Every structure is written in structure tokens, then in C-alpha cells.
Image (tube, rainbow, N blue to C red):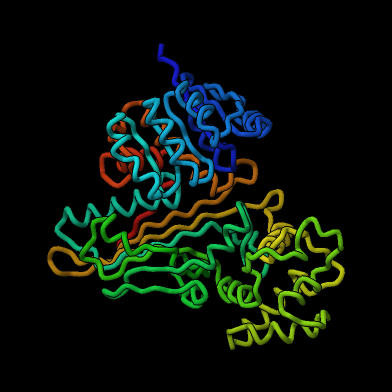
Length: 457
């Protein structure tokens, strides 16, 4: 009889269910679903498959309460942290003290990296960056890079773009986008500076110009998608061991038309996250959307005609069709209307997020979609050239898990199970960057029908 394995899951967000579903296939696994609000943990436990072999138990744990966190961690074999990344260092410290393993889907932050030696000294594995992006993207990037190097070749160019998108039939709004997570996070990402290698030089794209840098990405002929840089990917020459590469970029993928509309919304001022007194929830005065937009634009006239005249001057594109689509989008948003009430959230950004969340949620029966593509330009040992791609296309199940939840949660569950089974043994604060880690992960990810399709041109 296999000994019980106790797993502590911190957080009950939308990626948690596929992760726990995977772990509950094993009868020895007991998963404690822990949230600060126990009702959320109880709700997740009720959603889990009734034919699971293992057990899921709800619990109340406040990850910011060090004593409570340490006690909970000490009572389990491994802890999965799906709470905001700012709290991961606290979780790792508690795990080091109790000598328990940790798994997260987040990038390794400086505060987490500082705990690497302490984790090694404690003999624990702190596996991170094992979701989709980061996660599955690492696995296939390194697999192909290592294969090319083993054959005496060079990676001259590496371009990787990933998008969490609505399936084509659900992309029925002017942005071609719907929210499966925080609208605020999506919008704030539009302000990030992108940094990457291109043609042997470091390129930096400031946030205000990020949408201008979007370029077509050719994946499947059926998809009209574009991509732009995602934060700082300049360090991936070192992380992926491709010093010979003259181009290294990791980026975000969106449907065609998104960048122009997003740029216009930024130019209007809807990414402004400074507190505004008149937008405070404590302000009792009702507020219509045209009043919000007039205040944002500094216009005394709140009529749709007057507001549009100002907005037109802030639309950069001179393409007449794109301008027409943006005008249609502004009308669809209702931000010039006197009949639609704004939900006060303190800042222009948050009030706008509330409006987007009303309009751009997945409806019942709608699917999301994940599209990831790596593209490698290769110089082979004999001097000839080759292009390789690794492409992941995953659709959500309207009667099951969203594609985003599945492609993040299942790899996390797989990594956790491999640690419990003693098949991952490298200690410290790590990511899946070596063959002894990525090979068993790829094998099990592909058994879940999530893997990338590789092609050579």
C-alpha cells in the first residue's frame, strides 16, 4: 500500500482546478485547498471530479500570517503556491524551515532567487516557472536548442510568441479579446517597456510605443495574429544558452486590430492609475460614462460629438479602415454615453476595467484558445540553413476547463507529482532549464495532449 502524500495548495483561482484534478488521480494524494476565505476553498473542492481517487480538503490559511503558514506547510509533503507572486518568498521561507518542497507557476523573482542556497542547504526543491508561459514554452525551447547544439548547429534567431485568446467564434468584440483573469493586469501590461535582441543589438521599446511595434506572426493560415515584445527577454541568450543568437525575443500574441485600438485607449488616458477624487467609491453622486470621459479629456462639453472630436486627434493611425474600427469600438464601449453609469473604483484605469469586465467576459458555451509558437532560424553543422517551429494550439472545453487554466494548471500538477515520486531531485530555487527536468515533464505533458507540434522548413 502506497503511503499517503499530503499536498498543500495555496490559492483557488481558475488554474487551480486542473492542477488538483491531475493530482487527485492518485489515491494516495490528499490535497488541502487553502485560502484565506474558506468558502472559496470549499467551492473549489465541490467542483472537483467526483470520481477522483484522492481527496481534496478545504482549509483556511492566510499566507501572510507567518505562524499560520509555517504550521500548514510543516504538515504537508509539498506546497503549491498559486497565490500572487509577491508572497512566494514567504512560502519558500516557511518551506525551508520545515524542509518541504515548493512548486509555483511564476517567474523566479529576485526575492525568491536569494533563497536558492538556503533551499539547497535544506535539501528541498523549489520548482518554479512550470505553467504555460513560463512553463511549456521553456520545455520546447530548450528541447530544440539542445538538439541543435548536440548536432553541431547554431541558433541564429529565436522568436517566441504566446497568446491567451478567445477562440475565433468568441472573438466578437472590437478588441478581439476576452478576460479570463484580471483586466487590470492585461491593461497595465500595455505600459511595459519591451527589451530584446534583434540583429545583434539590444532593442528597447518604451511602453507608449509598444503597440506600434506589433508585427504579423504567421502561425496557421486561419489566424490573423500579431505579436509584440513582452518585458525584458534580453537575458534569454544566457538562460537558454544561445550566445550565438543575433535575435532573441519573447512576446505576446493578439488578434489583428488589437494594438491600434489599445494604443488609442492609452492615448485617450484610460491607463491612468492615479487616484481621482470624483471616481472614489465614497462619492455619492451618480456618474455617467460621458462625464468620466469628458473629465479625462478635459472637455467642458460632454456630448458624444464633442468628445469624439477630441478622441480623433489622439488616434495615431492614419489608416481609414483602422480609424473606422476604432470609432466603432468607442461606440461599442459606451464611454461617450449619458445613459450608462460608471462603476466608481478610484482611478480612470480601474473604472475602465470595470466597464471592460462587464462587456468582455466569456459567455456560457464560449471557448478560449491558447496559441504559442517558437520559431528558430538555424545554421546546421554543414553551414546550411533551416527553420524550425514548435506550435501549441489548445482550445478550451465549454463543459470543462478553459485552455488557459489547463495549460497552466496541468503542468504544475505534473511537476508536483514528479517531485512526490522522487523523479525530480535537483534542489534549490529552480526552473525547468535542464534535460533531467524538461524531458520527464514533456513526456507527461504530451500524455495530456497538450504538447507542441514541431515542423522543419
